[in-house]
Amino acid sequence: MLQQQLTTLLAQTDIALTQKQQQQLVRYVELLDKWNKAYNLTSVRLPQEMMVKHIMDSLVVAPHLTGHHYIDVGTGPGLPGIVLAIALPETQFVLLDSLGKRVRFLMHVKHELGLDNVTPVQSRVEEYQPSVKLDGVLSRAFASLQDMIDWCSHLIDHSGKFIALKGVFPSEELDSLPTGVKFEQKIALEVPDLDAQRHLIILSKD
Image 1 (tube, rainbow, N blue to C red):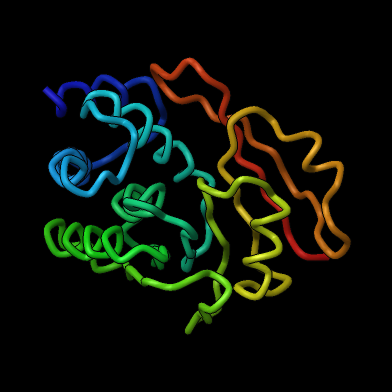
Image 2: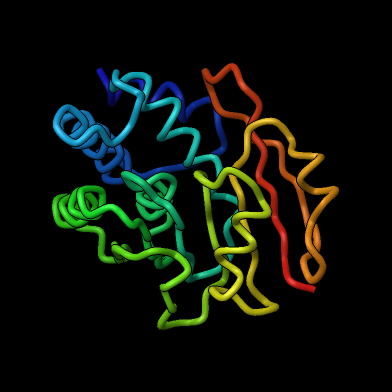
């Protein structure tokens, strides 16, 4: 049933995934559903809802990532990082979270799905130092762009991007960006079967 749902949702986008990638996404939802009962990883309880609110909501970002090394800060159960790693197997993703139970889940998912391009890390973001030059910092979880910039600025240089997954377009937050950071681009995202606004906000250092 989840496979059929995913096929139907993908048909409403321009995103092409192999059979293996689709199977990995379905398996990820099954694992998330199973672990969620014990670990409370997400407030979304139904697998069918996860497919829209987590999988598709993350997947629509994939066509807009052009670099090879990203970090997903505050990844939680791997959103959007696991989904993007499945969609972009040639791209490396560090999945950072401060909670051990989430990182244990991510390690299990990495092993279960055979994701060689994923590195789960348990750390507070301000204490983490990347081992390679990052093309971008991804976040779906930060309360504000200001917080994201404050906590993640050390992770990228002037060639890297802050990439924030947002709901309603955050015009007030963008009006009060700190000095040294500039607004690059906004991308309105269409998520099939999701009746809510989604925007990708891309910032860089001046």
